[in-house]
Length: 548
Ligand code: N01
Image 1 (cartoon, rainbow, N blue to C red):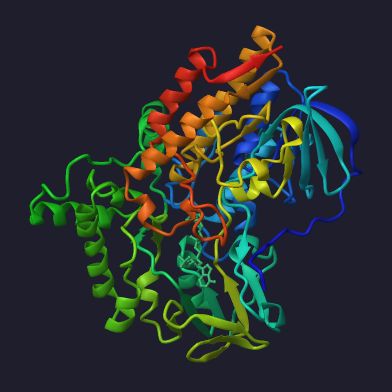
Image 2: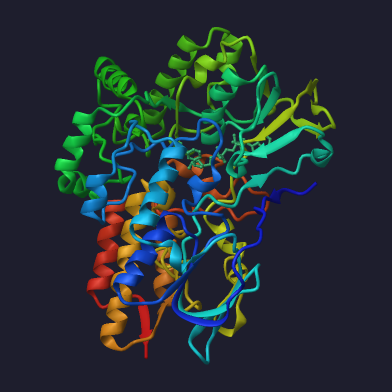
């Protein structure tokens, strides 16, 4: 069986629109599509937003699996554009749970009356640039046929859920669920024997919760991941008040930072520090928990020896936590430097393997050969289960864009143009596809950052660009191929200066068979990237071609 993308089911809804024309068509009603719509309205432009789900929220609409939670702190994982919104919304936990983030998305949609320009349960299937009319012709799976002067993708970086092509998967008689397409109704796990395939961020979050609810959990691990404790807790109201009162300063530091978070990142060297200093710094950051752990030293991301010191600190924590030394060793990552795969942040992940109802199967040495009607068979044993959870990830960044049949000038398909990997200018546009903007597209910091910081930066930049076009009388903007070549090269060069290319990660497309191995996000940091984008705009959109 081939690896498959899981398309969500679409259902009935309002009658399809044909012949309508808008200033902009936006694809996706997650946090980027919602804010884009708000800004388009502010510019006096008309817009239609299409969304495959039955509501707003994007990632947080689909990822309803038990334990789903953001690993950026709630007070930082939210919009900053509205003072009133910031003042009226109160988070309840240090790290927001999926239901709370979804409530926030729904609150924003209500507050800014966003839904009236949105069409739900509607998937954009095709978008073709009509050169004569300088408009995008957009088609959906429900029969909509509309045009937009601008086409803005707000499709999310991690929305194309993938299940591996394991032979026999279709014959399984129990339930199977992908974490990114979790059912809306309660999944009954009591008394069940559950298999979990995958130990990335989703697996690491769901496994401890499943272990508490199910009779037995068998974890099929191919690659162990480094995970740092989140130490989630109720949000201290005094701290929340302080953040609101000091919002401008905190946001400024997030925007200027590497990853869009406020946690301080040291520049000092792990190698230069004495053992005592190094352990003290790492212990303090471990005790604080969350993404700030990786900011203990400035050379962790670039120097293998510095990285190994930090990695070994985490392995020692695993050995201290997991009672069975064999299991502790299996859980200890040794094939990639820490931080080169997306770091995970957990609640009780390693301790969960001390429970009698949890077992770990190493499918690196004994691969899953077949899924049978009643379970999974590896090279060594068979495992009878009632439920299979696929925590097997996504075709990241390019997957959701290439799932749409997008054609630009001369009928060139985006799939064709990006056959050897995505080519963009600033991750915002791609040459040959005029007036197509890609919010948090490949070649921008996107997944290497707090998504809210990157989303707001891109949406604000696009809104500024549209204002500039209106002011100058230009109607078409397009990336210059030379500027695009230089940017694409630059993204690769910056990645090559780091340890990122040493991991087989989804950042590089390594999780999707046949996907070109290209570092997808821009690793230069959100602060530096923002400066570049602002300079481009200040120089009259240097590297873009504007025409009447
Ligand atoms: O997916 P992943 P994810 N047999 O691709 C394994 C964001 N996120 O959904 O490493 C056996 O990371 C695969 O193994 P390997 C976050 O950016 C954020 O967990 O390829 N195993 C891996 O272990 C994150 O990085 C949050 O060897 C197979 C796992 O499946 C991104 O989403 C929460 C397999 C996939 O891990 C994706 O995370 C959740 C096979 N055939 C997600 N195929 C928070 O904010 C794949 N695997 C907290």
